[in-house]
Image (cartoon, rainbow, N blue to C red):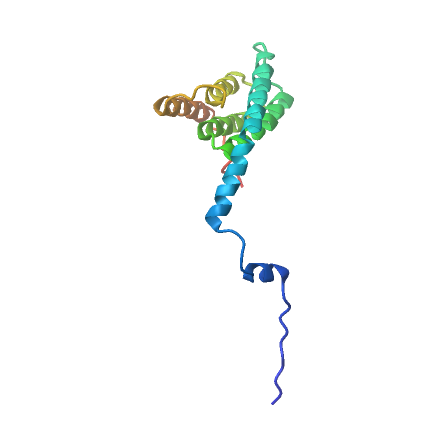
Length: 163
């Protein structure tokens, strides 16, 4: 009977994991959170400029319907805010902006250009922006409930649930 030897190659990642040293998980998380907090001012500025761009876009419509190109631009701008709001922990801004994304995407796919639901979401986003005094929790909840009613009226699918 012969014995066969099996060679298991070493993998650099396994070697690094096996080494002593480094920092504890909690220290790494604290350091990452401090890093994120250190760039929050820049993120807040990006949010502000992007909300201003959305406000200008809607103000320029003057009672007409939004075009598919304008709706696409709204989605691009809103996506940037969703990223920033999620990164910096602005939960209500994130929810309002995700609602705007759902409305804009639904309008675009339905061939509609209704301005009102877009405008009301942008106004809510303004209220939740880092440069405005945050509404009290019950007021924020009420605003988000009203935005949910707008979404329910249109009955567009959420971009969060599509696969």
